[in-house]
Amino acid sequence: MSYELNDKIKNLVPYEPIAGNYSIRLDANECTFGYDNMLMDMVDTAVHNVDFNRYPDPVCLELRKSFADFYGIDYKNVTVGNGSDELIFLIESAFLKKGDKLLTAVPDFSMYEFYGSITENPCERYNKDENLNIDVDKLIEKINSENIKALIFSNPCNPTGQGITKSEAEKLIKSVNALVVLDEAYMDFYSPEHSLIKDVNDYDNLIIFRTASKALGSAALRLGFAVANETVSRAISAVKSPYNVNSISQAIGTQLYKNKDFLNNRIKTIVENTKTLYNELKELEAKVEDFKVYPTKTNFVFVKTAFSKELWEYLKAQSIAIRWMGEYIRITSGTAEEINTTIKAINEFLSER
Ligand SMILES: *Cc1c(COP(=O)(O)O)cnc(C)c1O
Image (cartoon, rainbow, N blue to C red; front, side, top):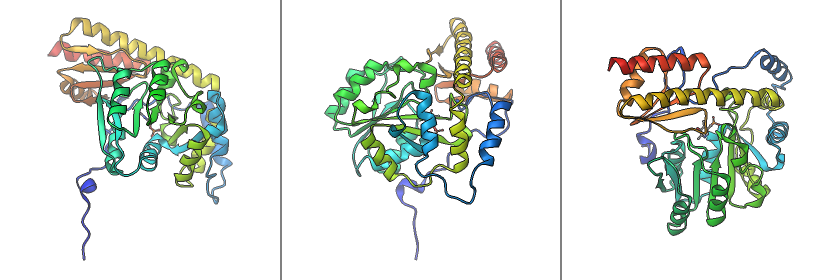
């Protein structure tokens, strides 16, 4: 008797985030600021009131209400996942039939394609232009001519930092006979004007993702949100595992979203710091050959350079973690001091070359 791992999983290796202790972590697009005393007091109270002997609320009612109130939407349009990651897997496996074509726009978040390979849905690719932008008309043409059943992309995009406008997104959704999954993980840094989170009831082919992991500074909680019309929301809720979000995360998340002014001010600070990081890198671009800095609508800056790997290794040796992605590097915004130290180290690297 024997069992052999099938082809799609045989050669997979578990996801490995950068290991080790770094004094500066600018590699994972997390919020650089931890919980302050006010939030820690909130955590104490929330955790204290959890019924540890009971299963969590399967529909996350209080958390959905709090999230919906923060963004000015109806909680009936919201379903909660164990991070957006769970939702990506769930949508790709349940909303596509076996063999249905999935489309991604590359470069984009790598998990979209990865889960497609597990669910056995062929993944087509739309290639972005040299400035890493999406031409919406070309994208529509591809979806309609190639019988694509679902498109998933991030807006604004990780890792490129680019974003399409609300009117472009509307045109896209209205012009295709396919499900459009719009991952707005970084929309808090871009602009509420370009979000479709308030418009989901106008569409039967739209799902929006939000997360507590980035602007909300709560990656540890694993909270992702799918926003869609009530029919689609009911379907997501029906296919998810009943107790996917634990009671501790629900309790803390519910209180977290009530701190509107605090959260919005912190987002403002992150956006300002990202601008500083961008400006500093842009100054280097003017002085250094082969160093292209892309504009950003997120909390990180994407750079194309022939010496990406050397720079990544140099910074790692200085205990500064950034993300290396082939011919690109991605640097998450940090505190003013972290940015300062990182720019200084990049300057050192450049002068030693
Ligand atoms: C970080 C990120 C997420 C968030 O995932 P979680 O599982 O909610 O932490 C989702 N989409 C994109 C594109 C991201 O970069």
